[in-house]
Image (cartoon, rainbow, N blue to C red):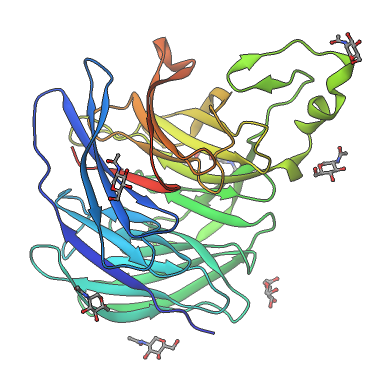
Length: 367
Ligand SMILES: *[C@@H]1O[C@H](CO)[C@@H](O)[C@H](O)[C@H]1NC(C)=O
Ligand SMILES: *[C@@H]1O[C@H](CO)[C@@H](O)[C@H](O)[C@H]1NC(C)=O
Ligand SMILES: *[C@@H]1O[C@H](CO)[C@@H](O)[C@H](O)[C@H]1NC(C)=O
Ligand SMILES: *[C@@H]1O[C@H](CO)[C@@H](O)[C@H](O)[C@H]1NC(C)=O
Ligand SMILES: *[C@@H]1O[C@H](CO)[C@@H](O)[C@H](O)[C@H]1NC(C)=O
Ligand SMILES: *[C@@H]1O[C@H](CO)[C@@H](O)[C@H](O)[C@H]1NC(C)=O
Ligand SMILES: *[C@@H]1O[C@H](CO)[C@@H](O)[C@H](O)[C@H]1NC(C)=O
């Protein structure tokens, strides 16, 4: 059965102040949208907008490159939205349902949604959970969790047409993905395998030309890490020690670049998050240092527990005002935190915590 992808464009004007930043949060269920202010000096978080939308479920949200519009998925399992960074700033959406195509939605000059112009077609066994565009918006990459594939389609902005180019079968449940802005790599979260897979990409044809490497997103060793504290091993916790090599206790979810602060510069970091399937064990956040010339991974900076399991979310949203801050959304205990990288990015800590009434899906920073 096909599922309708409803997208609602909301034009928002948050207050703009010096060291004060703003983001919006969508929710797994319900009809609310939160606007949250983050004060960089005091690390305080406060709600400045608590709106009720005419939607059945707000779920995943996205913003455009101007940060003047927030796009909100309306409907069950409308799980991913991405807005092109190049004119005419077309919006793409993926409803997570077997055989359901993705949608290409035209926008007006102020960013308002107009109409569905084309489908991004997959296979009847496909269920796409993540979308990514190349920096030039000429290629669309889809993480097909149900169909075990990564799809490449070309997109023609002038004619609003989409052409299927490649289906690459990849085991481990490809979920969310990003294309390096330098163009040579696509980074893919393998949800079930708890791995980050790196694919080589031909920037002219857009095709994926093979796997470059695969990195584990789980700790190794025998020390149970309990909600931010390192606990000495002892015989009474053998279940938890072995849990770290037990991938079935986790499901990885998100991959995002940090946002470079100077025009023409490339990201320094790649972040990934891992959800725990139990409420009693934390999820994880990982950071990798990137080679800023090629976009390849130099090394892993850290892999540390989040402050709760993450529930169905644990999504990460790197700040747009700095490469050192990001949010984590927790849908188990229902909160949003702001985290900050430590000295030379060897670790990160939660510096601000906001409890919310419902389960947050993801957030988008607007300034
Ligand atoms: C937002 O509004 C809802 C419904 O009016 C309310 O239940 C909730 O407590 C409010 N949240 C905040 C942080 O003000
Ligand atoms: C809410 O959305 C529905 C469906 O899109 C529409 O028919 C209805 O008029 C909207 N209601 C309001 C109050 O905007
Ligand atoms: C997209 O595909 C659906 C069937 O899945 C079809 O009804 C619709 O007309 C298509 N839309 C476009 C713009 O091609
Ligand atoms: C990829 O997977 C699909 C669905 O299982 C299958 O039909 C197709 O033959 C596979 N392609 C390759 C190249 O293995
Ligand atoms: C991975 O990418 C690096 C950087 O471009 C390249 O030097 C290396 O040969 C690639 N490895 C594989 C296995 O493709
Ligand atoms: C392990 O559990 C037993 C029984 O509850 C207890 O007596 C013992 O002190 C525990 N060992 C450690 C190292 O905590
Ligand atoms: C891994 O975890 C699953 C789910 O809790 C459990 O059923 C399985 O026995 C565990 N496997 C090992 C080797 O501990």
